[in-house]
Length: 79
Figure (cartoon, rainbow, N blue to C red):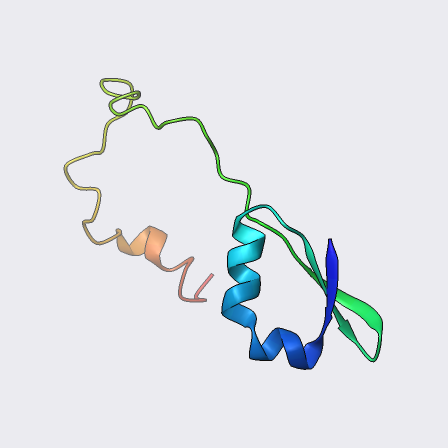
């Protein structure tokens, strides 16, 4: 872990992001006081399973049809 000042962070942001992506932690300081931490994003290593919910959920044919007026009135402030 290393600390860099705000000016250096602005000047070398791309390089610092690459370092963070490799696993390094960078502390960004303003007037010598730490204010932010640049760390790598945790990536989910589990692969997605396609078709996991097949035949378990369904979408009605009229899913995107306009709402009936008796329900729509709750959304436009008439109730």
